[in-house]
Length: 463
Image 1 (cartoon, helix red, strand yellow):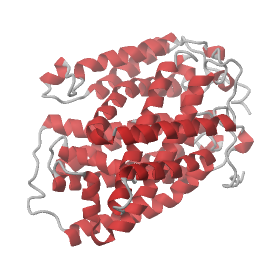
Image 2 (image 1 turned 120 degrees about the vertical axis):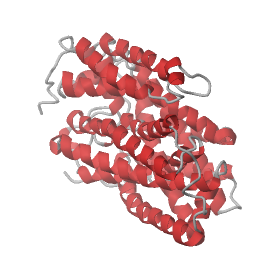
Image 3 (image 1 turned 30 degrees about the vertical axis):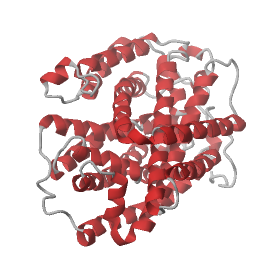
Image 4 (image 1 turned 90 degrees about the horizontal axis):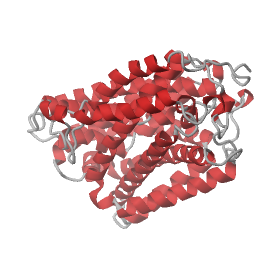
């Protein structure tokens, strides 16, 4: 079927998308994930490899590339769930955890969205201020937020269309920044010798790259649920995988380069300096791209909030007005957080990323094992949107218990400023908690859930 008019505001929220409303192709997935990653926050994340972890250029690039390529595997595997089931990712999580059992995961994901929205707004405000000194950072935060929330309110098709153009334009602009930095601005003479290699820092930077793409796992079905059911696992996987990988790696490498040049300085100002004579258009375009990423976060955040609320309101199905009101509330909250929290942005952002790592990895392991190995993609979709959980009930204890066990398993391997686990200390400060969790929880969940869960074909799935 043809896509609906972009001038129309999306009516659906968390309910299953009927098969006759499906549209789109695998190329939709490449452009949305490439475009939403080509922004300042990705550059700042890449800069942490050389600023926070102190690596020199080649090891930092290798660590980020390895981390992104590995982490994106798990993220992209979620992509097939949207076309098959037609519901947002957090709604689908009820099939593993039950309607009430999923609350902890959904609440954690809501906090994740709020954190990314606020982070994007801070960087957007800083970018606008650097490009146009007469505009304050706070004003820039509000401007970027307004553009983002408008796109989020229009919804799914507007965001996909926005991302299509952003992906092309920002790709060309990023290439221009690389050329400007290398041939016009110039690299310092000590560029290749600045920094040092240690295995703990290499693992830390690789974990950073993996976490960046793993953190997108709760988003993926939100942006594939309108796609035709017969699109297939392979096109959905590869469109998502390469869009995310390439869209993340390229700006991260640029960030690592800028980090070596500025040391402990301002990454946004370093990016502006690297842009040289094309600084003004580059900063404007990357701010527009950041608005695209923020719109994606607001849209998904709204779906997660509505999922959370609908759990407690019997027989209520949120419609378009609920989505619009929730979008505005999230916008207002994120603007306030962005304005108040910008002083210690980089420190807070790094801590935020690692908290995400600890709570999302066990969920990813459980969700993917359940979908691909336990139920083989067969679920009773109408049960997802029943407050009592339908055939999945209020709690699916195998998933709930494995989730908390997964978090507990991570603790000895955690390496953070506030706490470093005993095994992480033995490893010289390397944080491999996410690897350990995936390796242990995936087979454990498969073992305890096999034979205890129902594989079903609902009336919806059979359409």
